[in-house]
Image 1 (cartoon, helix red, strand yellow):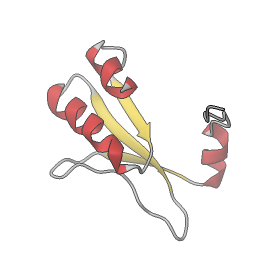
Image 2 (spheres, one colour):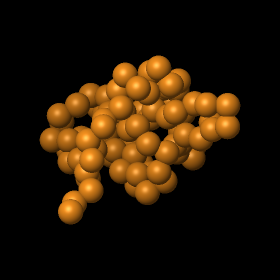
Image 3 (cartoon, one colour):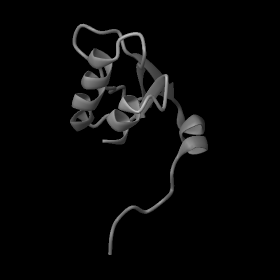
Length: 84
């Protein structure tokens, strides 16, 4: 929701989603299609020997920022978002 809401509010020029969860794709698609040239959509993903998955949009060349372990640890959010 925040990715789309912030795009609608013109709160960013470039939005980067750090996820491989495909349930995020509708937000990427909406923003990419609704604001061409105004909001640039990119993704980031963890790269390891056994994992090279990333989000992508069919027919679009979405930039991916590949993170290694050192990069990931530098940006990781250690907050526990589980509700009691």
